[in-house]
Amino acid sequence: MGFKSKITRRALVKCGLASAGLPIVSKLIGSSVEVQAEAKTKSDPSFAAIPGQVGGQDICGAYDVDPNWPKPLTSLPGNEDWTWGSGEGVFAENPDRVFILQRGELPNIKRPKEIDLPQLAPSLAFPIGRLPWRDATSASPPGPLDGPNHGTENVDWRWQHCIVSVNSKGDILETWPEWDKMLRRPHAIYINPYDKDKYVWLVDDYRHAIFKFTHDMKKLVQTIGTVNEHGSDGTHFYRPTYLAWLPDSTMFVADGYVNTRVAKFDKDGKFIMDWGQKGTPPNETRPGYFNGVHGLGIDLPSGRVFVNDRNNHRIQVFDTNGKFLNQWRVGDPPSDVHIILVTADRHLWAFDRGTNKMIKYDLEGRLLHSWGTWGDFPGGFWGVHGMHVDQEGNLYVAEVDNGRAQKFIPRKGANQAMLIGPGVKPVWS
Image (tube, rainbow, N blue to C red; front, side):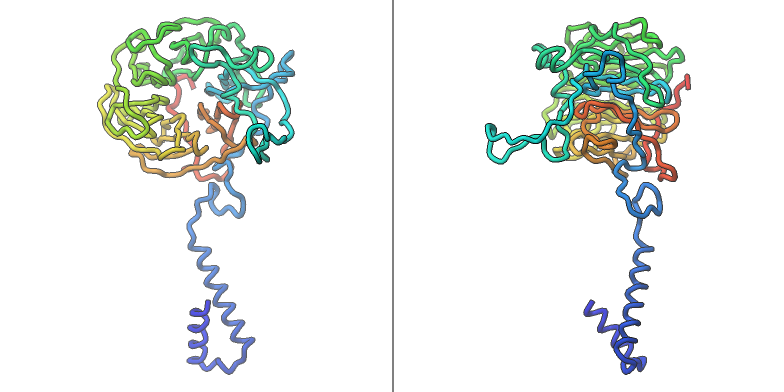
């Protein structure tokens, strides 16, 4: 300010205005500062979700959250004491039939009052302020793959309502209790967008299997993998995670938590090939070496398969026969990308559990945009493990840690580049 004031006074002296008196000088200097401030404001770039927005924080990015979607599980008869468990997957056939996949139910209890915990260490208390207080993925069954479940059944958890469907208002429309006992650790749910018959696919990583149901979920028509037997060949998986398809219904399987490969099957479920080897996390750089194959996406125009190499903190890119093409790193720890989504507008969106951010990349890996914040309030994130976009542009997420699903609605006037685009248009849409 001192330097700018001197310049202004010199200019006034040159113009013969120095004798005009301090009030006039102050008024002129003030006007100069106001003009400079106004010019600076006009030239500042805006990164707001709604161009020209005044105030606000874009906590939910370019979306508004629907705080009443879905309706609570307590609304079901006889379910008053139980709520959502760990949210594993979500898939919107359309806005009025959205599948939610979860690992059982948890007790419907209120937030505990804060208490000191001197028996653990000095200066500790729980819960902490306004932060989330129950980690649903730790509280929900199952326990270790070859061990018992945590806690006591019907006290700490209940193995019911693993699969439900919800309409656009959040009403729970369908439940399938007949399949609960078959499931051990349901992980992802889909309808192949190129299948006019709309079969429903479900991945269970503890069963080492992929189940195919009729559209109404009343009949199991196919099982790929050998149930309860792990391996790494054409008939075995070892904790598979996610699926993706080509237009001819060729299917790719991310396999997975223990195996380190992508497996390829034809439209009838016949094994074609696989690729991938076990790498050394967390800084493996060799192409085709994986640790935690936890997400797949396909860009049809270029025929590229994008693989989330989770524990190596990178995305690897291949052709449909496993030829390596490219890779990029998504960040050092705490980065922990849970899921990726390749959209029809040819971008890759990732959710990072470590930073609680939705991240947008172009298909060469250039960082374009991110949004999201940690919390258990409506619109906050904690452990997004599944996400999908319906035909109206609504975004759905399932959260393992928060233990819930959420629906995000595009804000009016939002910058389209900040919205997550849908996948390919389904043939049954």
